Structure formats: C-alpha cells, structure tokens
Length: 107
Image (cartoon, rainbow, N blue to C red; front, side):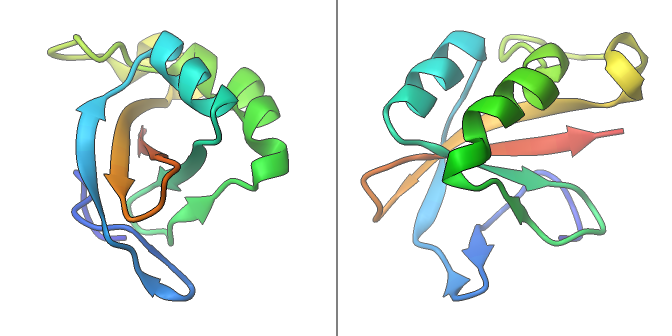
C-alpha cells in the first residue's frame, strides 16, 4: 500500500471487485459487524492487513473503537487519540454479500 485514500482492495488471491460506498461511525460499524462484515487495515508502506472473522469483535473493542474518527469530522488531530494514531472507516461494497470495513490508519 503506497497512499491514502485507498483506491482498490485485494487479497493474496488478487484484486476484489469492490468500491467505497460510505463513511462509517461506531454505530454503523457495530451493526455491520453483527451482520457479517469484515475489517481490513490500510497503513501506508505496509500490505493490507485483513482481520480474521473470529477476531473482528475483539479487534473492534480493543483497537478501533477508541481511535475511530467520526465520519462527520472535517479534520482531526492524531495526538488526541490513544498512542497517537487513529482510523478513518469506510464501508466498501462489491460482489460479496458482506461489506468490508476499510480502516485507513493515520499516525
């Protein structure tokens, strides 16, 4: 991954037929997770990090929830988040019936 915002999604199997649909806040993410959505972390300079289905709820609670930038925020300061980093969340839809929540990491 070389830059944000992310322009395409991929796995080890190749490019996914998916595109960004909407920004997401905490309530939307919790609803999507309960209905089968998955997480992928996009961090510049690193490969996409897919969070396993079994770990998605614990990852949400321990890592993302306190560091989530509100979707309506025009700007944010990373030093206002725990450990000086945060996530901007976007829901991506595509061929799969379950959406993907892309977490763009800012640090």
